[in-house]
Every structure is written in structure tokens, then in C-alpha cells.
Length: 286
Image 1 (cartoon, helix red, strand yellow):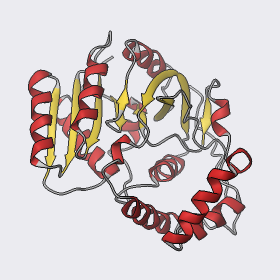
Image 2: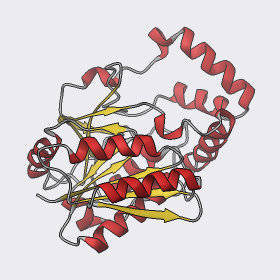
Image 3: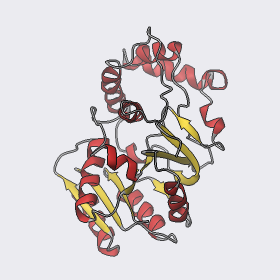
Image 4: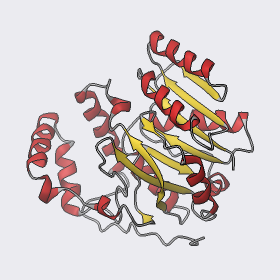
């Protein structure tokens, strides 16, 4: 199996360096790595050029403007497909990821079972061992949806809600990740990494990217659902995530504004006062 790894970079080439080093150091490295830079500083671009010079399978896409996360990944997907048309499996996501030595072997085994699964969401854990998948198994409650509306109504109110959530995390946190040992269809996988299988490219040309950043988990879920598919979570693929490393250079208030803008788009499709049916029936179970 030939596969590609596509990631975005924004002023953090040191993360890209580690991602490239670990995925290339495995038993089955990718045929192609495409790094999409979203208008980083000249110094960071120089660091990316050094990475590409050291790894022949690395291709750079240097965007003159910051196009955002999924749109940037789409640029990388298009470049990878143009360079290697026979690569029909792609690992896409952040650059702040680390891959184990057997990643490629595990990926091949999972993709072999995914004839009718366009998107596979891997087991992702933070550096301190906390699982981040499955991200959302069955949907979002009405109460939580209303809290989201309050959170995105005002930045200062958002800070208060965040502080309260930290104090009450044991009660108010979702616990979807508790099912991380079980392979299953899920509503949303964590947005830091996805596997696009050959079935994805049989159905779609690109990711649906209606926002600059944030909310990608929902938009991918909806894109799949409109064709009768769901994301499949498979813990056989394992990745470490330096949580929030990809956005560490973005100010907190700007991140809130980006998330608020994404929430407004999300609200066009999901109304908290209507019952949402997130459990699509997959076309096949492989």
C-alpha cells in the first residue's frame, strides 16, 4: 500500500520536523509527504526548506496567504494526487503529531478492512497519555448546544464558562473517549488527524471546508453523512498528539473569534431546539 501524509504548518516548523522524522523513520514510510505552509515567517519557511532538502519524499506547498486548516489540507491533497496518482490513501491533519515505528504496517491492515469506510479516525493520545478519540460518539445534547451558544455570544462570557468548566470537569465533561479500546462508527473523530481511504476518493474530490478553522469535525461528519457514511474509529492506528501545538502561535482571543465564526456556520445546519439524528446507517460494514 502506498500512502501520503498531508499536514499544515504555521510558524512551527519544529513540529513538522518531528512529524516527518517519526513517520519516515517507521517500517513503512509514506510515498509522499506534503507540507502546506500557511504564510509563515521567512525564517520558518527556511526551516521547512531544510526539512524538504533532508527528506526526498517531502513536497512543500507555500501558500502566499493563510487559507486555513481544511482548505490548506485540500491544497496538499491536490498536490499529492497530482504528484502520485496511484496514492489513494492519505493521512491528513496537524503537523504536531508523532508516529510510532509500526504506523505504516498498522495503517495497511486498517485500510485493507475499510472498503466501505471513507474516513478512519485513529487512536490519538496527548503526550501525557490522555485519549482524544473517539471524539463524539453519538451526538451533542441540547443542553450542551445551548451552552455553546452562550460561549460564542461574548468573549468575556466564554472565559467565565471555560473557568467554570475546568472546576466542574468531573461532572460536565463528555466521556466519549472512555470507549477508546473499541472500534466503532462514530459521529465525529478528533480533527487533528484522519485517514482518507480509497473509498473517500471514490466518493469525493476534497474535504468540505466552509470555515477558515474550527468545526472541522462536524463538517466532515456532515459531508460523509450526506452520502450515507460515518467516520469509523479504529484504535489499531495509534498517534501521539502535542495537543494545541499546531495553534500555539495564535492568540487566544483570535482563536475564540475563529471558533465563533465556525459556530455561526455550524448553526446553519444544527438547531439546538430540534432533535438531531446523527446516527446514519452506513452503506456497508465492509
